[in-house]
Image 1 (cartoon, helix red, strand yellow):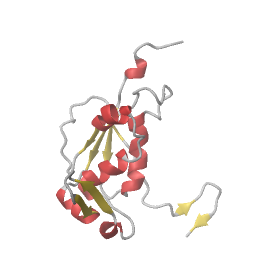
Image 2 (tube, helix red, strand yellow; image 1 turned 30 degrees about the horizontal axis):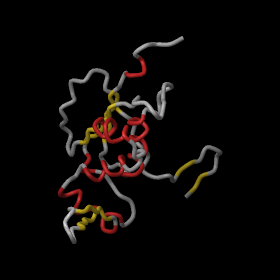
Image 3 (cartoon, helix red, strand yellow; image 1 turned 45 degrees about the horizontal axis):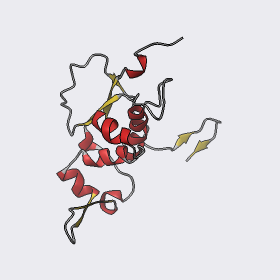
Length: 157
């Protein structure tokens, strides 16, 4: 039985990034943009959802990544390679840290550039212009670390 028009329906998801680790949060957001959580998933079609991320300026990085992780770009002028540490990047452009992590987890195809990047809405604070969207679902928080009980009864310190 087919349901015409059902493949194009897009839901909205709200994600609070406060005190969340960037990589773990990005692994939760990227499948939503691709549409992998839907039974109608097809890698060649645009079936993903819209994702709104708030508090992107309050994300966390593990280890010494605040000082060691570099964000690089080129200005297309000779000798124009520029770089910033993650700490400088979060001060100047707070949404770029999370956006680069999420976009880096999506295949580099025409779907990514023309559809998926446009459906990722990241805001540095609590306020966002998508409050009047009907049916926006909050995403559950991601655990901070992998330390804890495993599924087979062993506790890992």
